[in-house]
Amino acid sequence: MRPLEILLCCLTVISVLSLFFKKKHSLIYRRILCIVLAVTLVAHLLLEGAHWQLGPLYLAILALIWSALKPLAVERIHWLGLLCGSFLCLTGILSYLLPMFRFPTPSGSYAVGTRILYMVDPSRGPMGDDTRPGQRELMVQIWYPAKPEGSKLAVYRKYAETTLISSYQAVLKTNSYLNAANNYGGAPYPLLIFNHAWTGQRTQDTFLMQELASHGFVVVSMDHTYYSGKVAFPDGRIIDSSLAPDLGNLKNSTVEQEFALGAKYTTIEARDDIFVLDQLQRMDQDTASPWHGMFDLTRVGAFGHSIGGSAAVEAAYLDPRIKVALNMDGWQFGDVLTHGLSKPLMLMYEKGTEIEPSSAELGKSPQAVQRYWQLSVKDDDEVEAGLRRFGGYRLFIDGTSHWNFSDRALYSPLRSWTEAGKIEPRRACEIISRYTLAFFSQTLNGTQEPLLTKTAHTFPEVQFELWNAQDTGPASHQ
Image (cartoon, rainbow, N blue to C red; front, side, top):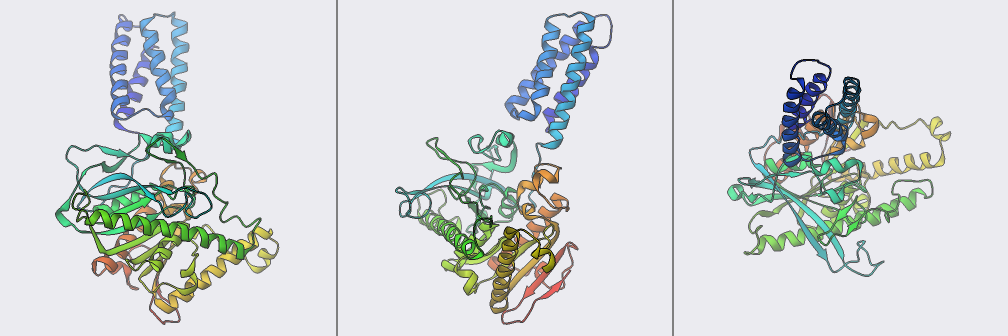
């Protein structure tokens, strides 16, 4: 809980307890407490913002203020105290289940700014292909080294881009300053393009965006419209993923059909990356743009989660400006799966939550499960063929699940809700951040990163593989 929320809870507890004490002038004391409560509540609403988990607490405060204004019989006061105490307990439960969590503090020397941009690609249809008339619209968010003087911390998401349950994220503060001035002290900075998971959102890896920006990278993420969560456009329109196919569900598709479907949407998202990179290049070259001279377009990388990781590698395959790529726990689709990537490549995978069944077990499994593992094995074989040919890095993080490669693991301590693995969520964030930073620092900035050597043993949870081009297998450590 945030500071004023904690203070509100403490004052409410004191006010509830005061209902059960019979002392001279107790009504006066209660009224004084309620005035302090009311002032604190207003400060909380203005400075921190209301959210639904505190709904029972708000009701308790209003009931206490009402009881102080209108004296009640002793019996009713006691019942009111029990009711308000129940509201406090409910608030505690809700705040535990879905807390106002804090992002890991960025470890770099730069303060982080963030801005949201609206971009339109007139050369493609709304869904990234030519199946519908119109143009493709994208909401793009940038995290960058900033001078935060006079700027406020940005909230995690826009209210219009949340659901009823996630609406609290519209008042949840990040470690980034909204629309802060650019810090040109280290410019031009290397540029990284991020892709979210299927039906994810551009903000889904804020912990990682902020960490990279604090170390002198500009990180750009976009909502892949129609294939992301809710997207709010400047004119008030909201588009969700209701038209997106159920990618990865092999109940009604064959392995070959799923590879074709994955390739289609990987290519669409990779073209989104290339379009956004075109726009950023224009802004960097435009002397009237606030981004003029901010990006080093000779040092560009792409990364992403799930199918977003596939899109990042495909974009690097298609565009010579993108020098390196990182895929976080995603199958690989598209042309690059067949041909491999002749550029620095890192692959991160979960370990411990998804175990391949034996042949006997697989034979007894439903057809969709059999197809899933057939696809997974075939994808792994193709990826390894590319690693043997061109080299690269691959690591497995013990105790992680698919969603540990996003902010989602931070949302709740209940892993059954977040679908996180057994690893402590912040530990997973640290490992993912350290390897991502080391990879982009070494490949784009030319630094030597001990973490990327086969002799490093910094994280016992990591099985790390270093593949050299034309090798038959990886050198690894655990």
